Image 1 (cartoon, rainbow, N blue to C red):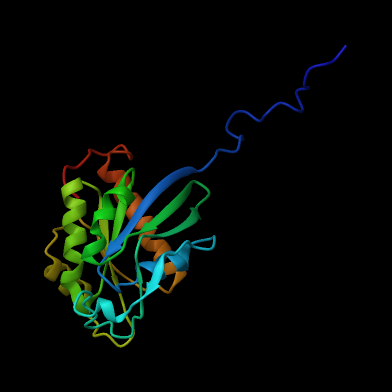
Image 2 (cartoon, one colour; image 1 turned 135 degrees about the vertical axis):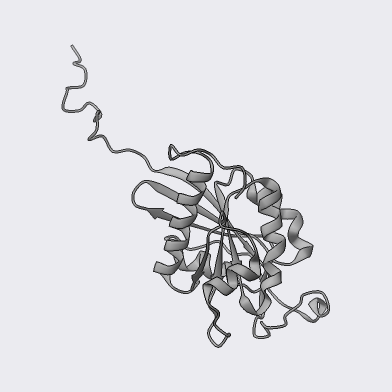
Length: 209
């Protein structure tokens, strides 16, 4: 006679049972050369998927490289990475291409996203406005993370908030896309903001990000 599984072999139940982390999709958007690829590469616990190509003479007059003259590559599809946070969430990060001619891909990348990070550069602050407008139109919660580039003029966060004119409902913060802890904090702030926005924390759901 074949005996069934013993109680010792039975899967764990109750509060001690290991819970699988929740999968969360995050979109990282912003202007050309703002640091999206760098941010994904910094935080990803796996080797990030990148779709970068070299800038060529054909991009002259098409891609505005003012302020980022040293940049010699560009993302033509998306960046993809993954990070596990606090054993509760696995964040799947999708970096969008920054140039206008690739904006048609944003809808596909943004489907199912919990929220977005808009990376900004104070040298080209207006470049982040299309990303802000995009998330606002989709009613997708987002935060603005100002990437502090070495050698760029530093501004007080209050000055940047006034220049962006987004109001108190959109968190704005400084970050360094090269630093792991800085990028992690941006993602934590986004997840908390998105959960509050979508009413997942027990607080009243807001209508605007």
